[in-house]
Length: 567
Ligand code: GLC
Image 1 (cartoon, protein in one colour):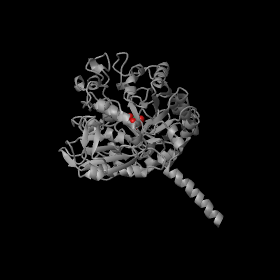
Image 2 (image 1 turned 180 degrees about the vertical axis):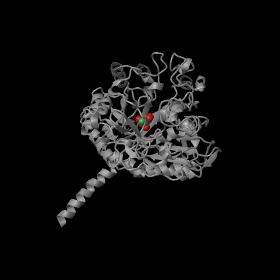
Image 3 (image 1 turned 90 degrees about the vertical axis):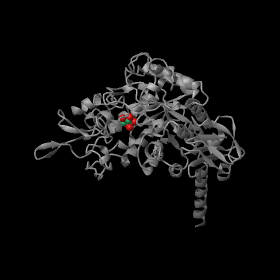
Image 4 (image 1 turned 60 degrees about the vertical axis):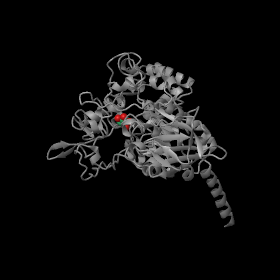
């Protein structure tokens, strides 16, 4: 009895230690803790050969921009061989580069220059589907073993002698998720475009192929992967109809009309992830990272940590909060997220990406910096989408200009709700032809007409620009208080949200955000227990709050929609 309780005590002590102080050795190896990751959408970053589409040499030539920004890692959206139905997310060869982007040798040069600048390279891994032009799919159609089982095939449902899809599942890009194949005489599943057949993870041979894809790129020096649309990886084996959501007001073809209980978030998905984690962990050199893309509920999101994801993307600024959210909404959502992270793992804050409206569009140009400020001051990893560092905004597209399958499939009356083109326009480097993105006047998506004034070159000259503010915010991740301090999120007034990070013996790092469009005056010193005078580290664009000035916090007046970081 005594021996059992001593043993229990010991276990509790060890456990208690672990919970209070996550393994510091592991934390040091984990280079991604307290950094910013920068997403490059290759088609739109920099065109080096004048064809109007970005490429690898273009990216390599511009890597200094990322180093200047103090970014730790760049994540490249897909660069592999692709018919470009979904602009690279439909892959015809997982281990080669599409000629639009360059060659494997260009990729090697990119990695080597990135390393010399101290930048880690993360690739997009797209495991849910391939292109229908992939040789695996061609062989699957012909029922050649083992490829016959690489995709999700089902017989037709025959009703009154007529052929129908096996069930009511809908594609995320609208319409039935099933496509009839005349040669194989079966339907195949495509949760995205018709040209993106879903891969079948119940085939062990297929998963082995995908592990080899990971190994191929790891051998070429990459530091990890962002895993695309992971919740859709495995489907329920019973292939039952998904329940309808009543009264959505959406057309029957819209995936928003179904509860995706059989096509997303299945338990086996997590096991597949675990099998890939083992591949990463078996690789030498510095620790490798997995970032996972899952628009899902808190429980499913947090589960990714346990199965090997280091950064299960936190999409709260995209999926939960918007420009009508209050200070309290933000506090509640941020607290809820922090309270759910399992011990020892890092938080993350996704400011924007290529699938959603730009942050300056979602929250307004004045508010865009607030989200980067939160990502910077809060513990963990900030994720920035290229162009957000200069406050680029959406460029609305006409139906004729629309190329994104998510937009095209929705048709002329609804494309503007679903199209992602507006957030994917070329990066605005300067005020020359095509914003310095390309020497050609004709680019794959139009350049936003505001490029003459809104561009990187102009913002570099201005200490109060989005660029200058973002650069400082990224550097703040190196501040020891931001790296190791405690975190409190405080409602300082109805419209003012405060975050305070503290580490004994050092000045606190304080963030204040005014959610009202009118000036707000609050006694931050009293409510947040912070010094009555602090230095301005950065003020949001348009606030006219200048860095390196002293501000009183007792009280403090924040202009409408302004935010400030004080140290
Ligand atoms: C992910 C990508 C998106 C793509 C889809 C299908 O959501 O971010 O751009 O269209 O997966 O691969």
